[in-house]
Amino acid sequence: MTNGTAHPPSHEQRRSPSGRLPLSNQPRPATAPSHRTSSSAQHRPPHQGNNTGADPSGPKQYNGNRGTGSSRISTGSVSAGAPEPQNVPRKPDHSILFQTFFKSVGSRTYAAQIKQATNGNQYMVVTEGRRDKNSDDVRKMRINIFSEDFEAFFDLLRQTARYIKEHPLSAEFQAERKKFWQNLGRKKAGMNRGDAPRPLSASARP
Image 1 (tube, helix red, strand yellow):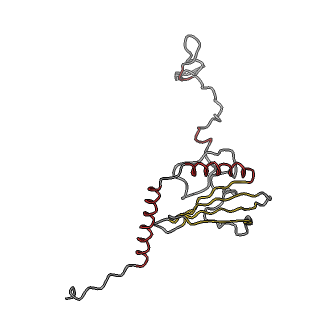
Image 2 (image 1 turned 180 degrees about the vertical axis):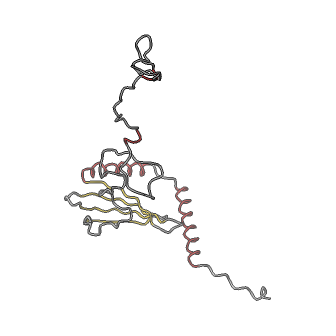
Image 3 (image 1 turned 30 degrees about the vertical axis):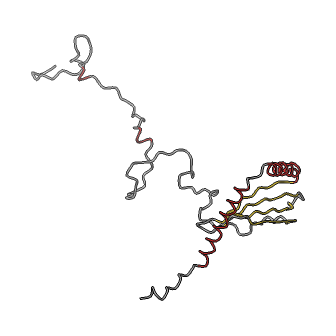
């Protein structure tokens, strides 16, 4: 039994003719909370408090290698300013069995030595020494001939000497070269003495 008051239709009474509820009144299916996070959150380091000295470029990604950063010091490198070891053994000098030399007409000196190596082998050292005009240092050039090549080397010298004897320089050219070296020697001797200026004659004095 009802009175004259009208009641609003319930959800069951407000169905559409097709039997479905309006879209605004259909209950939404419950969705499970998503566990996906943004890519930046995956690489975000744990909270370290208020770090005022943090790198402004952002968080650094972990590369999977612990303790192998760029600050690792290599133990195999040696400082460029490190002193050289002082106790390095020095190789023994080869003993000199024979030596001779001669001074050339010019500024050169030639020497020949026979030395004995530590293994007992012998070798000849031919040296040309020349004094530098600017620095006054003696520059040396050496060639070594070992005992295995003595015979061939001496044969080379014999053939060269034979050619020089068979084809000598002319007497005129030899005299010219001799005069050249004599004049050069007198010039050097005067430079070494200083050649003090001659005193003025009585007529030239003021």
